[in-house]
Length: 337
Image (cartoon, rainbow, N blue to C red; front, side, top):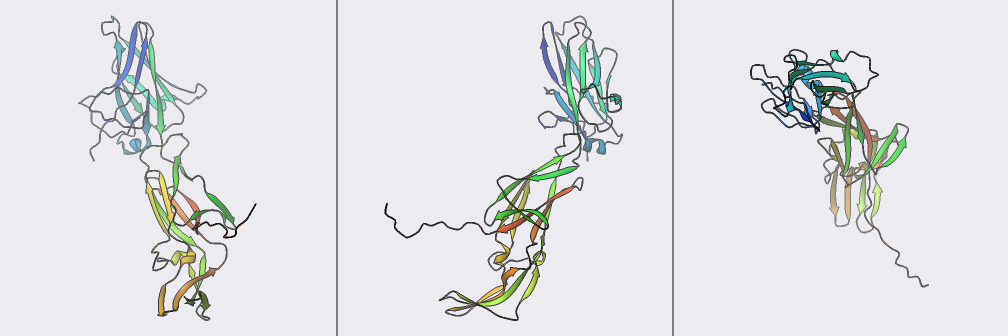
């Protein structure tokens, strides 16, 4: 894959007597590498143009991993105005935003001007870091300055799965979430790490497994009276994880999808809907095979696991599909006040 330099850095600042603006610049004689350097609004820039840039930039773990040199560099230029000023030389500096940080900042970020006093410099990131690093450019005449905040967008070290307005329950296996059949529930996937910022290249997949079992039994139903007769000797125990088709009317228990950082779950039915087949044997009699009778015990749930594919980290939620409200009615009695 053809690698590109993604240059970033910014600033725009007015003071009486002069202006310093930090903009990106590129050189055609340097090899292009894909850096994934992001600007403050989480968009990315290429090294083929000069941009008006915000006051923040971020290097990514993906960029360092893809670099053949083990570091990522960005070419920048500070514009000193007015252009007619007799001395347009500047000095570059780099420091931790947190002055109590005693680590050598040069082991993480360096700024090297192309020559003494030059408005052009190369910013290089060598390794991941926590917190913020401030790059400042200061004019030698007038001591006007502007700065850029540099952060590091690391790979996520953990992910959380959150939702709101949910009904929770607790069993011997821990807590779970009740999901009403026929409704769609959206959960937000939140990646995080010690750097406090995660790159925009997270990608998620999901798996689902059923835990627990149900007991089924054949029965007959008198459609005239709705009387149900269970047939002895036909009981079976079926693991929830082995159920691939719930019934002739519900092919799957859930519809699940991930769009960006949103996990959507729609229960189509519940385990109580389980049945393998139904046959009408007369105008008033139906035979049902392997029909849900009961849960083996109360330790049942479905576990949905979300995995970030670049790192392999994952998190899970336990859910139970339950019957939703289907109707509401008032008493037919009449009261007089």
